[in-house]
Amino acid sequence: MNYKITLLPGDGIGTEVVSAAVKVMKAAAEKFNITFSFNEQLIGGCSYDKHGTPLTDDALSVCYDSDAVLLGAVGGYKWESLPQHLKPEAALLKLRKALGLFTNIRPAKVYTPLLSASTLKPEVLEGTDILIFRELTGDVYFGEPRGYDEEKGWNTMVYTREEVVRIARNAFDVAMKRSKRVTSVDKANVLDCSQFWRKVVHEVHKDYPEVTLNDMYVDNAAMQIVRNPRQFDVILTQNLFGDILSDIAAMITGSLGMLPSASLGTKYALYEPVHGSAPDIAGQGKANPLATIASVAMMFAYSFQMNKAADLIYDSINKTLEAGYRTADIFSPGTILVSTAQITDTVIENFNLIFDEQALGVFTL
Ligand code: IPM
Ligand code: MG
Image (cartoon, rainbow, N blue to C red):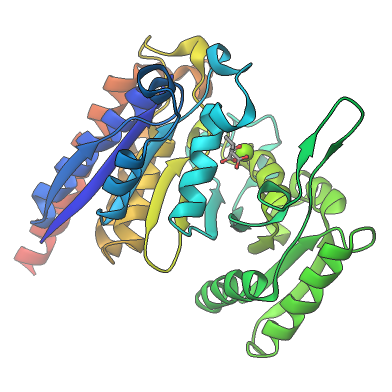
């Protein structure tokens, strides 16, 4: 089997974390007898510098022609004062919309060796495993009209029935395979759009009688995630609220540098770390590649249905952390500070080790 992968490293540390993740992909491909053909394209500020636009039609058509897209990060101080439609972030939004990636999945799961890396207490975090379903192509992010003039600025929060139904179904389907609990997060006490969201989510819920559904206002949800994260399993929420809550939830994993994501539509899929381009540490070998490597694990699971390979990648990350290896963002006294390349090589060594052990186990049975 050969898979076509579009690589969009982007700006800042994006290039470092994507090349680290590609090394892991190659190692996994070798063990699992598949091959990848990679096609690398520009996105974000680097594309603007070269072509005057943060995403060219050519780059987009390469994405359309691939089995999965792996993205690093976009943005940087250099491009902050550009008009909205030329900013690096605009490319990411365009890409999500063009590929129809309406379901964004962000797992906030605690890695036991990192319990003390978070600013939150270990006893609060222990055992937390949250899956955030963030709607990704609607809401104020895309609603019209939008704009600003000298006197006012405005955006439109809007959802259609179809937009709510399709993400709700995806969340309920996955909840059925987990602990059958969904928390739908909205701001229905104030916003009409959220009242509609809530009404439609409850209609969809009728098809999933085994799933327990509760509603929560977003302000309360933000507080509850840091107060008692274990109460959550699947969180289903609007685009804007999901953006904010997933950064909060990142602290469960110890660092934003640990949080992977999958963005799925009916035809295309994109995988990216939740963190940004971190221009202050770019090019210094300090970036944490683990969120991008975990995004690759999600790619194996969701795009190639290779759950075994995905689990092995997660296990290798865990084993690496257990051995004490840390990039600067998750470093604590008593652990071993390593570079992007060193931690990646260790993940790969562990991957090969666990694979060979398991293969041998099967052989000697
Ligand atoms: C994210 C980011 C993006 C978003 C930005 C970079 C446009 O914060 O993926 O969470 O707001 O969706
Ligand atoms: Mg965000």
